[in-house]
Structures are given as structure tokens and as C-alpha cells.
Image 1 (cartoon, one colour):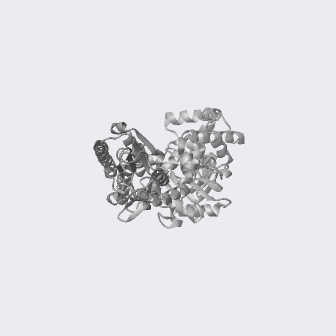
Image 2: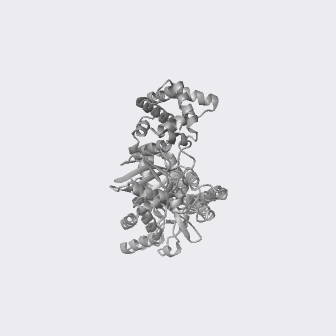
Image 3: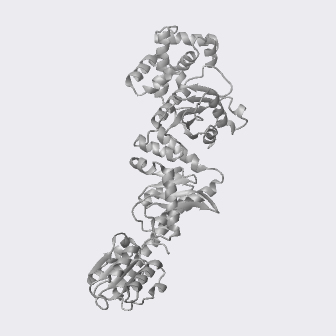
Length: 542
């Protein structure tokens, strides 16, 4: 059946002024009136079905129709089988009323049936309908050209997948989702307040939508009953995923045509990328960045979004990690997690939160799975092993691990703990993956939990103010020296080495720090307060 994009419905046609004089009565309506009409045919012949291609509105007086009920029933069923959009029967010349068998059969098959109680010129009706059809088709052609130019330009500029999805959603006025072949959400343009409703249990709902779409296509149905549109993203015999548009308003170019243009733009981008899975890289990056920046309306919606992206949360053991000291290639984190029986999302750390090479990893393992140091070292080695031999690549890697969590909120807190932990100096030089846990650093956990408390911030500023002012005025390194000393308690030699200073110069710096702070640097309580203040400052700087 031809595309119905831009075609008027039976309901819209009945609203034309040309039908007013006929005093139209709808005998079978409701959903049947939403059928699209691509042309009008006038005939009283009982064999008219063989002359139809589908999508027509039939005008008839019924003059040549059979009299037997069974034959009338067969006539209407035959019209339905051809794909007739609607039947308009003029009363008076042959029928004084529409036979009950005609009404019942039309209702049974969902065929729009209208009776005209006054005589009208069929030629006037035909002209009015065709004028409307041609006008809308012309408008649809112009709209399709505009949409095609817009998305072709996006493809030629190399626009990323998430931006193309955003443009599709704006054009269609409805949510749009890009998913991979595993039905995992790669990019989605959904109102934050609607994320939970639309994305919860996404994989099951998506698979159901695909089955319904396949059934619709086999039946040559005009439109999906639930309003979901599914279009594959493919080129040269390769399919990468699907675009799904959820229910929304009509578009002059046709919603399916708009979605197809977006799919073409995405496919061209994938061809240009070659084997680089930019979809996954950009999608994960945007998702992780949004979560860490708090760009979500509610936890329920964010949870649905994360699970739709393929990261299980419910009933899983969750960890927020930060990897420093090694380069983590795209897609490696998820592959390393799969080796442990889990899944992972990764992205860069927020600006200033950690070194430029730092990578944030959201790790989900099956509930009850132990993520001990041995497993963590294997995971860390797998993360950077792609850059070279695993042992050599992992030599300087530091894996900072937050407190184990049971939900998304806890996981995001664990990420923040990991970022705070990653910002603190290492206690000593080490080779091989270094595993640091927030559970082992109670002071870091305390600062993370109270990071927004103004009293804690005031404590850090007040206690360190003399050192901050000294370093700013003279370009000094007193804060760094203090940090090295606190990172190596009881071992001033190691602290001097960490500061890259000789022992004599290091001791001179410590003496100056003591004088400026008017504090005893051998007093345990003083050292604890200074350590807390320094952690607060590092946290606030981010």
C-alpha cells in the first residue's frame, strides 16, 4: 500500500464544505474515520473491488449492488480486503436506508461507513477531495525537501549521534530514542520528567515494539496502533541499530519520512567512522557527564535511563571508580566488566575534578559478587592493557574505589568519594595497579559526605589561610609540602622525596608552615585538623 504521509483522513474529508449539502451521517466511525484517503472512486458496480488498489474513498448509490444479504456481505468484505479507506453511500435513488447487513459487515471489519441523506454531485465531492489531497501532498513534498536538506547537512558536518537524535525529537515534537542491536539506549531525547515512564524496562518494551512493527508491516497496516515508529539505521547491508519515535503530533513531511532521514544521517556517520564505535563512546560519555553534573530531574528517571543504556542497577552490586595513571580506551571498561560477569559505563571526570587522563567508571556486578583487591587489580589491568602489555601498561595505574552501593544515588556518592580519593597523594611509590578504597580512608569519606556544609568549608579556609596567602603572594609550595607530610605521617624522608625537595629544604618549609600557622606539627590533633582542612580545600577546588 502506498505511503499515507500527508494524506487526509476520512474524518477530515467529511469536514469539507462539499459534504455539508449531503447531510452526512456516520454509521461506522471512531477509529475507522482515521483511515487515510489517497483518492476517490465513484462506482455502483458490484465488481468494483477489482478496480481498487487500496486507500480509496468509494462514492456509490448502490444501484448495481446485489439484493441478497450474503452477496452484500461478500461485497463489503471484498472492498475491505482491497484496503478501501471508507464507503460513502448516497440514499434516495436506490436505497432509502443503508441495509443492516452492510452496516454490520462494515462495523465488523472496521470500515468507515457514511450515509448521505440528500443528493449531491459526486463530481463536486471528487474535486473537493482531490484538491485537498493534492494540496497536502504538495505541502508534504516541500516539507520532505526541507527535512532532507537539514539532515543531509547534519550528516555532511559530521554531527554526533546524540545531536541528530535531539534534532529529530525537536522536529517531530516527541521523544526519540536511538538504540543498538541489543536494544540498549545509545542516545535519547526525552523530557527529564518523563524519563522513568518512557525508559523503564526499556529492553522488554522495545522488543515488543519491534514485534508489533514487524506484524504491522506484514499486514501492510498504515500506522502502528500504539504510535511507536521503528526505523532501522543501516547502510550497505550493515545494520547498527534502530531509531524509535514515540507518539507525537503529525508532521507535514510524515513522521516516518522524518525518522528515515534521521536514520540516513546516522548511517552516513557510521560509515564515515569506520570501525570506531562513536555511538557508544559519545553516548556513554554524555550519560556519565549528565549524572555527575546532576542533570536529571529525579532518581527514578535517571535509574531508568542508566538501565536502558545496559547497566543493571536493581539487585546488583554497584561501584563508583576513578582510574588515574593510565589511558582507558573507548569500550574497554565494559569489556573488562563483562569479564567479571558485569557491565560498566565510563566517561571522563568533570573538569578539574581529577587529572585530565582520569576516567570515571560506573561498575555493576551481579548481586553478591566480591570485588576484592585481586579482582580490582585484574579489572585495572584489563582497562589499560589495550594500550600495550598488561603488566607494563598497569604499572602506574591507580584505581580509586568508592563505598559499595545498592542504588544509583549510592553509586554517584561512591564516584565522588573516588574523585576525592584520587585527588589525595599516594602514600608511597608503588608498581602495578594500586588499589585505593574509600572504606580505608574514613577522613576522605567524611569530607565527601559533608562537602557542602559551610562550616566545614569555613574550617578549611580559616586554618589554611596563612599558607594560601603565602603561596599566592610568593608562588610558594607550602600547601604541597603540607600535603606530602600528611600523606607520609611519621616518615619525613619519604615526604621530602614526594615533594621533590632535599631533607634540609623540606624541614625549612615545615618550620615556616609551623610559624605561619602558629601550630605544633607534631601534635596529632593538629595534624588531623590540617588533614581535614586540606581535603576540604581540594574538594572545594573542584
